[in-house]
Amino acid sequence: DVTLDTDTAHPRLEISGGGKSVRDSGAIKRLPSNAKRFDSHLFVLAKEGYTSGRHYWEVEVGNRRSWALGIARESVTRKGTLTLSPKNGFWVMGTADGRDHWAYSDPWTPLNVSGKQEKIGIFLDIPAQQLSFHSVHKKAALYTFTIADGGNQEEKFIPFFSTGLAGPKPDLEPLKIL
Image (cartoon, rainbow, N blue to C red; front, side, top):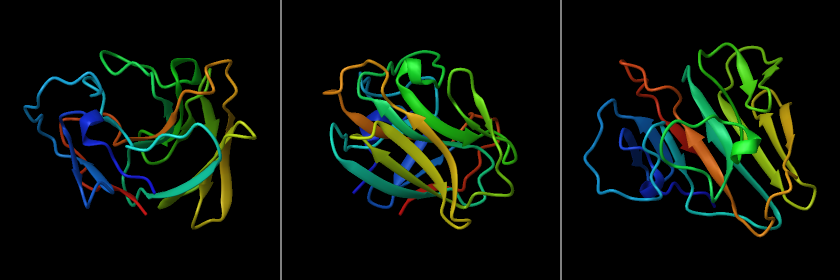
């Protein structure tokens, strides 16, 4: 069961629905300083992290034009400018314009994805050292990362969510964990 951790959420993000929904509120809230909180990007992590086993969750992206989903190492940098990539502890895919989809690999990989992706299935298989993304409605594989990066396998992988770039006019449609 995946639930969003409000302590990690950028101050512009609004968590609701019992920790199952996140949206860009468009306004930065005054929150206490917190080492766990992302301060420069619209990112949030789940409360749960995994060191073993197989885990699956689905996220409804709806009609959002911008989003990113995947996993992050528990130790990822939370402050300042970040680049989404495995070498920085992020295994993520997403879109910034609703058309072109990318795996944020090293270098980024354009994905051959047609049309809107309303619901994304994410399968973390730690024994196989893989993270795979699927289009739930289209029943199609989107991308698979290998997550063996020589890091500490005792460190948790935590589900990662982003509402995308912080534009002047926020997209108010939420990302929803199903």
